[in-house]
Length: 446
Ligand code: GAP
Image (cartoon, rainbow, N blue to C red; front, side, top):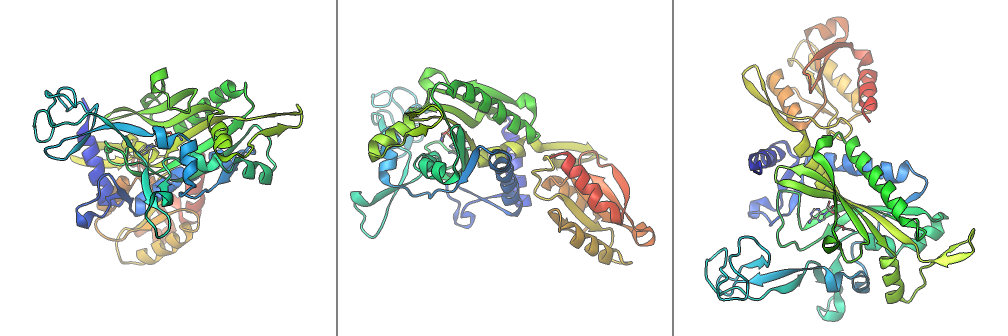
């Protein structure tokens, strides 16, 4: 059974500590739209930086891109989204609610007299299923007619395909090579939910790898391996990660083959990243719809071909949620419950807290000097309010791996204690050594 209480506790911690807030909360919130607070924005940024580093900075064969959200509307005809990015929906004529046709709460067959609305309970009020497009539409310019329709992109991938020749030529890459992009995507999901798992506005971290036809299956396997290692490198529990292969009926319209990286959430095994062999579907369609040649000229082989694409597509919000779920734990310590986010230090929003034990006897001055020194290297948090135990607990809930305390001995012998979040063990360290002590431990865990 789903452990919904864990999700409830996590949502509450995220609000309490400033990770995630409901959007427009003072107006009652907006369905399945969330805002990242001071700690959340750092955590998600660390996820994105880590992805960017692994994909772009650490490799010679991948270039970065930041394409616009709004694109020519023909892009979405070519991509298949106008015709095919749809879900079957039914309406209740009585209460005007709308449901997915396969909603398990519907009793009977929609469109038939026996079908019962799951909200108002009326029989025979549900319409036949109609296909509903998940793309958000808006108008460009002052006239709101069909010629002015543009879409908020439902995936970042298309910005890469339409720029593939620009990047290829300007970067002087050769196939095989990739283009990576992080950016917002929008889907008018019918059944969003589970906190930031499925939302209508989200961020994707997508990479499209362009390869010679015939080598795609091999690259697909390589990318599967690299992407799973990346998830492991975030410190996620290995037993809670698995592969899910898409059967023929599950495959998206563009995919020859697809595997999902799934995580075992309290609400079941769910996708956090998709690896897709998209063949030449995308470049073929853009070549057809734009009328522009998108072939690659392979000088070594003296031949032209349309590259095949292997895509890796992860959700920045989903990976952030995965880290939070995986890190959350409660422990009994001296008769009290300690809530800890055991985040991997590399993604933790704050690397160390700095605390004067009391606000007198030179401790605040020493702690402030140390804090100013440490913050040049790491994200730090200075806290001098309340009992030291409470300050430690606040940092445990924020996932901060270290806490440096200036105490009565510090002014006398120039040492401080460094507390480790997970073991709660404290080491006595010379003040001059604290930056190297922390940086050694943080970089060992990169
Ligand atoms: N370009 C391929 C593509 O978009 P997808 O499987 O539809 O493939 C890829 O999406 C990833 O984007 C998912 O694995 C998930 O992490 C994230 N994602 C998709 N829809 C989402 C939503 N409504 N809310 C949050 N993340 C979403």
